[in-house]
Length: 426
Image (cartoon, rainbow, N blue to C red; front, side):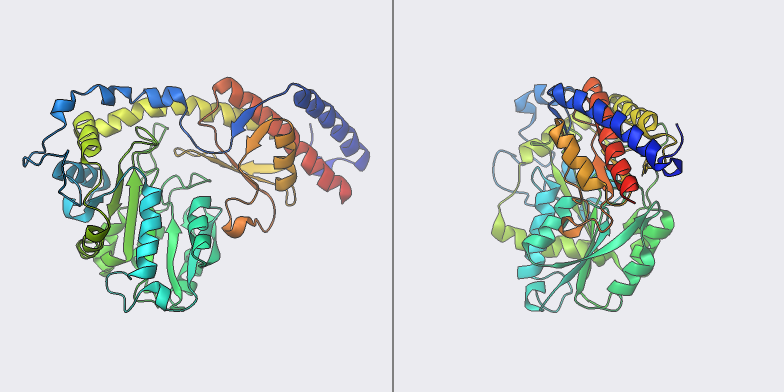
């Protein structure tokens, strides 16, 4: 079939009638399909069940003899800090072990910056008047909601396959002291699946912000989540920061929420030793420590970074066919029509689809009415506002392969209808 833009108006109307007929058939089938979030399904979660079979009496004492059932070791067990330092290419002194959620740690770091300030800052953010945060977009909706929660103005920064537009990042960060930070998902970004280039990571390390308390929130959620034979390389931002003396500027986060169990993983905060010392003093007022039993459970299960990598190979083998199914279905549905583009990631949990401007909300609405739930159109942009109304996030991980094929097929029909409506109106 030729591209929709090359069709005559009558040809488009005829094609629209065909797609609407297909749509009514799918709508009548009573589907209940869900691609709203990048959640592991039950089978993927089962890959980690052996971790729970460990003898609980092997999970009592750390190497130094600390009883993890009791208080103590606020920043985490030595074993856990060593494991995740090895994973991230850092030293144990750069690691603070949190609870089960890195998102919770990010939220907490934002509150602390607002109320208590950050290391090296003159006073808390909340005492400095209106604040701004840089937000690469499309990006992670929950990052943006944190800014909204605290009334922080968000500035959209366009994303490229190499990472955020660094000319814009420099323009804002280096000229305006009210710009306090930037959100980043540097590897297999949400939703495009892009990995920042070496040049982009170095440009971050080389930033000279106007604010003395500027922070890069480096959300490395998908650092170990490649599913192709070739894993995207990501430069170690702390190594590059040493070159520029900017180690204190970076807050790095990761967790095992999608490595083991989303509700019972361990979260990691990585930063300079100055930041870790500063944070630990603040945390000593908030808590006497996080779940050290769970930390030991993970350490004894993985044993090393190599053991964690071996575990992630099992997940990759499970997730890869789902992404292949989704990508094949999109190529089959859209190939040659000229009404959309989509990313083909090597890892992470999402595919980013860009349709014709003015079609995203209509497509999501049609999908919902046909029983396919998608992330709301615009969710990947600050304030939920996609200026071109064209981006939709596809999350292939949770449905079964059969459900995924059905979902993408219906999605393609809905996008075709939305595109034909726009083109016909022109």
